[in-house]
Image (cartoon, rainbow, N blue to C red; front, side, top):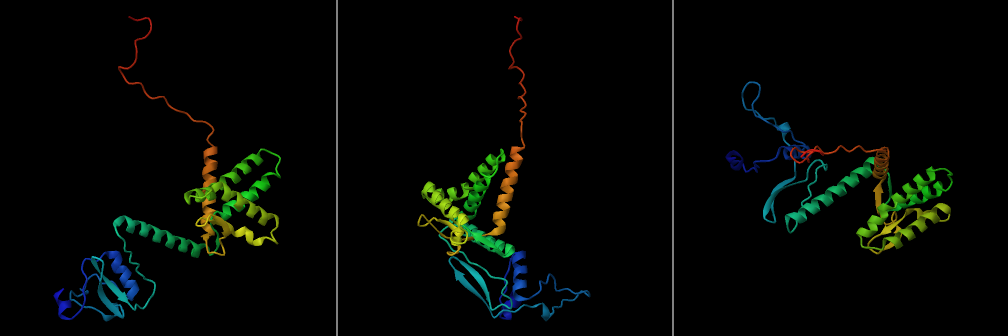
Length: 254
């Protein structure tokens, strides 16, 4: 360390391996494990160095952090979270992680749908109308599937302390109108729950969207799980073995 101090350089000790790799990618440098060459001498090539406009140490709260600014690539960004206690920081970390995962899903699927229970309600209305066209027992299964889809918007309304019965009734009416008059009431198909104000709104217009791939996968996995459970037509339960000394005396013996 003293060689760096004598040369006026900043040296950092005890850095995690993943942090070193991240710094190398951000600065354009190369991780050098050892200075020894094939001949046993110590050498260092300038091409292994990365670049940054400023490298400085700043105090944040009770700790000190090293800030690197002006990097040649913008692929590495650090988000510093500050909170009153560890519990708040954990909640902020989970919320930020969920938000980044949503953005990742949107970029992967390249398509979004309106959120706030819009997809589940629209699909429920469609399947409910389709079930009435069938004259077999399949009508009951499709009707139950349509009813099960409404669990999502109902749960959203209950968790927001809103009147779930009133909101779901209005939401179903909006989507039923949109499907009955697709040309005149086309914007109603984006209707979803506004849990802050307790009303129905165009969630696509207000930016409340969800990745389409997440909706497809959740519906597919839930359907497969329900089918797997329905395939179980019987259950065999083994009797627990009777412990010695607890059995009674056979009849007829004194």
